[in-house]
Amino acid sequence: MRSILLMIIALLLSHSPATTAQVSVRVDDVSNVLVDLERRAPADVRPLNNAQISAEVSAVVNAVHADVGQAVQAGDLLLELDPRDFELNLSQALANLTSSQAQKASADAKLSRAEGLVQENYLSDDALLDRQTDAAVWSAQIRANEVAVAIAQRNLDKCRILAPFDGVVVERTAQVGSFVSNGNPLVRIIQIDRFELDAEVPSDVAGSLLAADEIRFVSRGQEWPLELLRLSPVIEAERRSQRARFAFTGSAPAVGRSGEVVWHVEKGMLPSSLISRRNGQLGVFLHDQGKASFMPLPAAQEGRPVAVDLPAAAEIITLGRDRLQDGDSVNVSR
Figure 1: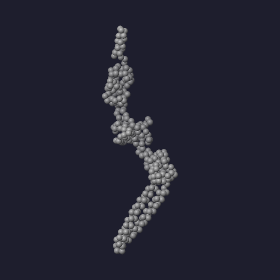
Figure 2: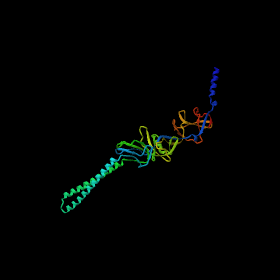
Figure 3: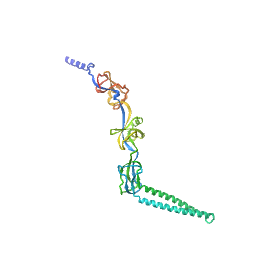
Figure 4: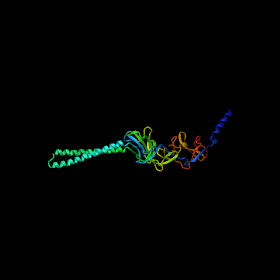
């Protein structure tokens, strides 16, 4: 029995504070471990115009002047449709206009003679009214024929498909010799000289974009500075996100490049990896004259960085915190 008591006493002594070994830890200055809190959102470079150009008349494709991958300028000829039917329609409209103009001239001459005869009482007022009506009818017919000429000319012009802006042809569906109907797609052009960055931002952090002092686009290890142009107030229900558009403040990547928008929310945050939980509280371990000092952080949340108000030279324990308790003696290394 005596031997058992001696063993118990020895065991208790071995766990007494006087014989507790120091815990080896690593420390670093606060200024070296603080980080900036960033937010990220998927984004891609989009042209302001991505046009699917379709036929506006029905005709056979005569020629294709721009193919996939070819750069074009506004007004360049892309395709030609067979114009013969529309040339005939224009010729007919012009002939009808000429005829109505001749009829109007004849009606005006008859009206002029009738006005003189009425004054000499050789023609009745009813006969004069007939002459006035004829002149008015032919005036209206001329206006109708002028409209018909304009329509025929416009349809003829639609046989020449022109580029609406500077860009690159990315798709061609029209084939030489094939018949296309009004509305059939012919070519698709993407504008490359005017573009914006489009991002899908989670609605719960979208508001922080408005106060961000540094925004950048990150893609494949490269970065480009941005400025916020507009943030949609509409929340897309399915993804709980808002659309944001940005402009590049300097050089820019190619249209179609995908990556992420990155912006700073807060600076000087303590990383979540340095936050510990003791006695139901979240906090950080500091080194204070050879001992570990646990400082609670009331604003801290699991897995999130937290703002701290500490001197830049304060020493934070970065490694060896797992077994630490407040007041433990520590063996410090850097």
